Image (cartoon, rainbow, N blue to C red):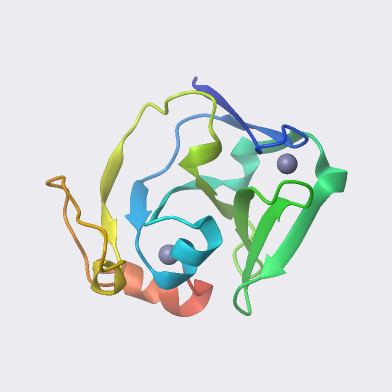
Length: 146
Ligand SMILES: [Zn+2]
Ligand SMILES: [Zn+2]
Protein backbone atom coordinates (compact mmCIF):
# COMPACT_ATOMS: atom_id res chain seq x y z
CA UNK A 1 0.00 0.00 0.00
CA UNK A 2 1.30 3.41 -0.90
CA UNK A 3 1.92 5.82 1.98
CA UNK A 4 2.39 9.50 1.17
CA UNK A 5 3.44 12.27 3.49
CA UNK A 6 3.18 16.01 3.06
CA UNK A 7 3.90 19.23 4.88
CA UNK A 8 3.48 22.98 4.79
CA UNK A 9 6.23 25.44 3.91
CA UNK A 10 7.31 26.12 7.54
CA UNK A 11 7.08 22.35 8.26
CA UNK A 12 4.98 23.02 11.34
CA UNK A 13 2.13 20.93 9.91
CA UNK A 14 2.59 17.41 8.58
CA UNK A 15 0.10 14.87 7.28
CA UNK A 16 0.01 11.29 6.04
CA UNK A 17 -2.15 9.59 3.41
CA UNK A 18 -2.50 5.80 3.25
CA UNK A 19 -3.45 4.17 -0.03
CA UNK A 20 -3.67 5.48 -3.57
CA UNK A 21 -5.00 8.92 -4.31
CA UNK A 22 -8.29 9.24 -6.18
CA UNK A 23 -8.42 10.87 -9.61
CA UNK A 24 -6.06 13.83 -10.03
CA UNK A 25 -7.12 16.96 -11.94
CA UNK A 26 -5.68 20.38 -12.62
CA UNK A 27 -8.33 22.94 -11.64
CA UNK A 28 -8.07 26.30 -13.39
CA UNK A 29 -11.03 28.00 -11.66
CA UNK A 30 -10.46 31.49 -10.28
CA UNK A 31 -10.91 30.31 -6.67
CA UNK A 32 -8.19 27.69 -6.93
CA UNK A 33 -5.90 30.15 -8.68
CA UNK A 34 -6.37 32.68 -5.88
CA UNK A 35 -6.06 30.12 -3.10
CA UNK A 36 -2.79 28.80 -4.47
CA UNK A 37 -1.40 31.96 -6.01
CA UNK A 38 -0.69 29.92 -9.14
CA UNK A 39 -1.92 29.25 -12.68
CA UNK A 40 -3.91 26.24 -11.45
CA UNK A 41 -4.34 23.83 -8.56
CA UNK A 42 -3.42 20.17 -9.02
CA UNK A 43 -5.67 18.25 -6.66
CA UNK A 44 -6.83 14.74 -5.85
CA UNK A 45 -9.87 13.41 -4.06
CA UNK A 46 -9.23 11.01 -1.21
CA UNK A 47 -11.35 9.29 1.41
CA UNK A 48 -11.14 10.99 4.80
CA UNK A 49 -10.28 7.61 6.34
CA UNK A 50 -6.99 7.66 4.36
CA UNK A 51 -5.87 10.93 5.92
CA UNK A 52 -4.14 11.64 9.26
CA UNK A 53 -2.63 14.84 10.63
CA UNK A 54 0.84 13.89 11.94
CA UNK A 55 1.61 17.15 13.71
CA UNK A 56 0.72 20.82 13.90
CA UNK A 57 -3.09 20.70 14.12
CA UNK A 58 -2.89 23.60 16.58
CA UNK A 59 -1.47 25.73 13.74
CA UNK A 60 -4.36 25.03 11.34
CA UNK A 61 -6.77 27.74 10.27
CA UNK A 62 -9.96 27.27 8.26
CA UNK A 63 -11.71 29.40 5.68
CA UNK A 64 -15.14 28.50 4.28
CA UNK A 65 -14.96 29.30 0.56
CA UNK A 66 -18.59 28.25 0.09
CA UNK A 67 -21.45 27.08 2.30
CA UNK A 68 -20.09 23.53 2.48
CA UNK A 69 -16.43 23.81 1.48
CA UNK A 70 -13.78 24.41 4.15
CA UNK A 71 -10.20 25.23 3.16
CA UNK A 72 -7.59 24.36 5.79
CA UNK A 73 -4.23 26.10 5.77
CA UNK A 74 -1.21 26.68 8.00
CA UNK A 75 -1.70 29.77 10.16
CA UNK A 76 2.06 30.38 10.31
CA UNK A 77 3.23 30.10 6.69
CA UNK A 78 -0.13 30.19 4.87
CA UNK A 79 0.36 26.98 2.89
CA UNK A 80 -2.82 25.53 1.38
CA UNK A 81 -3.33 22.07 2.89
CA UNK A 82 -6.69 20.31 2.45
CA UNK A 83 -10.33 20.95 1.57
CA UNK A 84 -13.14 19.27 3.50
CA UNK A 85 -16.88 19.20 2.76
CA UNK A 86 -19.39 19.72 5.56
CA UNK A 87 -22.03 17.90 3.49
CA UNK A 88 -19.72 15.02 2.52
CA UNK A 89 -17.40 14.31 5.48
CA UNK A 90 -16.16 11.03 4.01
CA UNK A 91 -14.34 12.84 1.22
CA UNK A 92 -11.45 15.33 1.16
CA UNK A 93 -9.40 17.02 -1.50
CA UNK A 94 -5.67 17.63 -1.33
CA UNK A 95 -3.36 19.73 -3.47
CA UNK A 96 -0.38 17.71 -4.67
CA UNK A 97 2.13 20.52 -4.18
CA UNK A 98 2.67 19.69 -0.51
CA UNK A 99 3.50 16.01 -1.00
CA UNK A 100 6.96 14.65 -0.17
CA UNK A 101 6.69 11.74 -2.64
CA UNK A 102 5.32 11.13 -6.12
CA UNK A 103 1.85 9.54 -6.08
CA UNK A 104 1.30 6.35 -8.08
CA UNK A 105 -1.20 8.03 -10.42
CA UNK A 106 -0.94 11.15 -12.60
CA UNK A 107 -3.27 14.03 -13.54
CA UNK A 108 -6.14 12.92 -15.81
CA UNK A 109 -7.31 16.25 -17.17
CA UNK A 110 -7.97 19.96 -16.77
CA UNK A 111 -11.12 21.41 -15.11
CA UNK A 112 -12.55 24.90 -15.57
CA UNK A 113 -10.40 25.64 -18.59
CA UNK A 114 -13.13 28.13 -19.56
CA UNK A 115 -11.90 30.41 -16.77
CA UNK A 116 -8.18 29.69 -16.86
CA UNK A 117 -5.57 32.43 -16.50
CA UNK A 118 -5.20 34.17 -19.89
CA UNK A 119 -1.41 34.24 -19.46
CA UNK A 120 -1.13 30.47 -19.01
CA UNK A 121 -0.97 28.05 -21.97
CA UNK A 122 -1.77 24.38 -21.34
CA UNK A 123 1.03 22.44 -23.00
CA UNK A 124 -0.02 18.81 -22.49
CA UNK A 125 -2.53 16.56 -24.29
CA UNK A 126 -4.77 15.77 -21.31
CA UNK A 127 -8.55 16.24 -21.79
CA UNK A 128 -9.78 19.77 -21.13
CA UNK A 129 -13.21 20.60 -19.67
CA UNK A 130 -14.74 24.08 -19.60
CA UNK A 131 -16.24 23.38 -16.15
CA UNK A 132 -16.67 20.03 -14.42
CA UNK A 133 -16.69 17.10 -16.85
CA UNK A 134 -19.88 15.09 -17.34
CA UNK A 135 -21.55 13.76 -14.23
CA UNK A 136 -19.30 15.81 -11.98
CA UNK A 137 -21.65 18.75 -12.64
CA UNK A 138 -23.93 17.31 -9.96
CA UNK A 139 -21.06 17.15 -7.51
CA UNK A 140 -20.30 20.79 -8.07
CA UNK A 141 -23.86 21.85 -7.27
CA UNK A 142 -23.69 20.30 -3.82
CA UNK A 143 -20.03 20.73 -2.96
CA UNK A 144 -19.30 24.12 -4.42
CA UNK A 145 -15.95 23.37 -6.02
CA UNK A 146 -12.89 21.17 -6.01
ZN1 LIG B 1 3.36 26.18 7.94
ZN1 LIG C 1 -10.95 25.04 -8.69
